[in-house]
Length: 480
Image 1 (tube, rainbow, N blue to C red):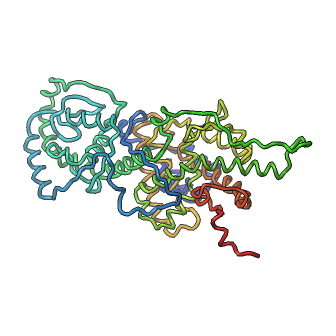
Image 2 (spheres, rainbow, N blue to C red; image 1 turned 60 degrees about the vertical axis):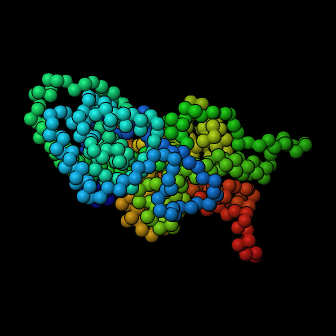
Image 3 (tube, rainbow, N blue to C red; image 1 turned 90 degrees about the vertical axis):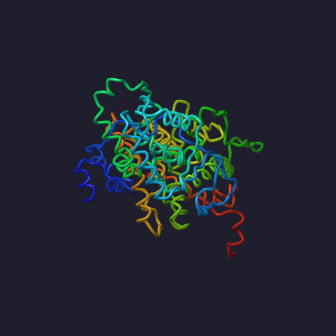
């Protein structure tokens, strides 16, 4: 409680405060904290915009067991991978050569230091970086860096590592929503001559050094999460445009016995179990997606396999609900699943309970009201996944460090993209205890199904994620 009081008095939401709020607390316990907090907003908006299509590689897994330990990094894809092999001496020579050419009098490109041709995507930049950024967001290219995202980006080597070049484009403020274009006026060239000469002399030292500190490290996290979310989430804004929605049902027709007017309790239970089995089939593809997404959360693969399993099992439902929030239609009382199947809330109420389903629709609606883009949703789900107080974790401190980085990344992203909405970050944080509560309620509802496991057939991965015995486990049951 002392930690919460300190956070409330300071009026600032830092990572430690958010850690407290994310834990299993009711919303009322920290309502006053959030109500009185302010958000430290950074410079003018930059980064991944709402309409921006970031690099994307779509991949699915056919395996039915959770395999969380990857051998090294993700294997090469058909995307453009850039091999960067320059050593320290070569980098120094390039920087020196570029510094000599920069002594000419011109307005420098914010990305590489070359001669800027005008304002492109909201930033003074050269034709090369303008074209590179346009191709990156239009063709949905996914880049990789072989030097841990620490490559120097200057005029003479800007084509060597496209990952670091794209990251710097974002860091200096390039965005699809920033559509100001224009040539650099001659008047500004003459008036600011001396200032430009001194600044271009240090374009590869002072500015590069400043950008490659904490903010660039945070943009590494943002870019990694953004790419992972777009690659392993079926309900991003772009993918939803091509959805083929279809009316569907979880109900299988059951004939009433001759001479009866209503179903018996046993028949009703069989119907409920059957509907749950159908729902499990609709949800299982999301489990594959969340597992693959988790592998790409910075630091997640460094955790022990047991801790990875605990985090995914404990957090899957909350992550799934966050992703699916935009698929809940309160007006029509429908939920659209990944394959386009539209299920009515009344059927979900049979599987769970009317009160629980009503809460699902309410939380989904309030989350949609925040109007977050795909990158922000990805960061949010990463924070949900990396919750350090899940029961059974062997190294909660390591999980907490992962979550701290994601919180800082989300705070930066929100401050850039929603600079006029000072309370938005606080509103986002308020969603964590709501999701946690629903997660606990869902787990309670599953207890009845776990008892009835022998009467229903479930997808193996679904049964594993929720610790439900499977029929092939029956050999392990000792007869009494």
